[in-house]
Length: 534
Image (cartoon, rainbow, N blue to C red):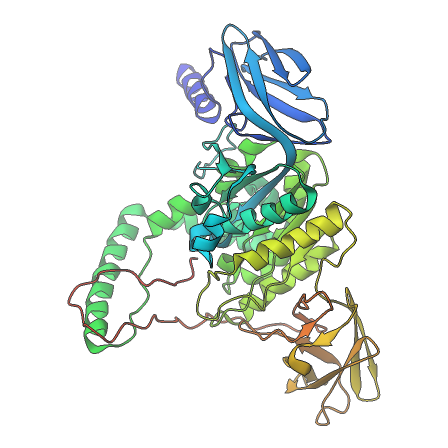
């Protein structure tokens, strides 16, 4: 029994920070941004029963630490302010956090395209010179995955400047910059993202196990996790790496494509965590920091045949769980996967899942099939991505009168051998460069044919003489699709299909990276630059 008690105590220490002196959660630190116009929880730790006085601006709140040493107060809702304030927490010791603003706070999360920093986006030198924006701050969560929900995380708030902007999440920064410019308010972004991670790492294991729709996937993932033998996995990886190095050397010598470098499965597991690992380590510690909303940029790692068909259940589950943890229906938007080659129908199914999830209230989606890069899973035009997310927030969350979405399929009718499609967000529906492409049409035989599509009276009519009795239409239903349907705001229509026919998923082909023909090398000097992380 004593050993069990010791283990329980040790576990508690791993989940919560050590007690004693009054401490603030790392989110409540110098350069922080507090959310305006709603109560602001402030919390930390102290000795059990210790009285803690918290002051900020003209408010003062007092509370006693509970049996676990945690304390929390709620500051009353405040108006936005760019005048720096000081937060003080006083018990037997006193902690102060200076230069705190009150404005709009958003959480940005996902995988590598959310994690991708400004110095990797296009026009970095130009963006750097224009980044003297001290009212924009970013907190980047540095914590790692965990098997249990954590109460604390690592990170710090950083003011935006030419010296610091390089390390900011590009998508989140360009979003925040648009919000700041339009609203003239301070903006805080919490960036909690990890490259190459699947959505199943970002939803609690309990929530996913409770979903009947996810049982087959979770059973397989947990089964695979149990059978992974670390020693055997490392040995196999080293053999694969040795073979890769030999093949790469030969390929470079002959000026041929270099094969994809194998990934160390132990490093992959460490980065992703088990099911729910990133939720435990990088989202749970943020609750209940006051937010305006959430931005999500992920999906690439879930386009595999094993996972793609389950994304339609996982994305709404993630939205609902995070909202439940914060105790409010937070506005929530995501980036639909862009155009990108060699990912096949799994890419399309994840896009479709994102479109379907718009049925949830207070949600939005940035369509990006016109700003991706066919050969780079990390497209550099993050300015457009951030701006489109900001359009949604300004129009849908902040009540600005403007178009904030590309055309979305609203319904279809079959009339005289053609399918007539209607859309929302369709004001000024137009064909880019005068011609609609990427439309397919099929009859009961389910044989897809290229279709003629034209805009008539604000709708799109689709037909093909070879399909006299059509029943279904698809638009941009391929990974590297071409965006041709836009509205007057210059926003592209989301890819869609009117059918629900089963999609056969196959592993996409490995896309090798072209080696430079000049100066053949006898050693491996670098890994392939552009590879999707799974």
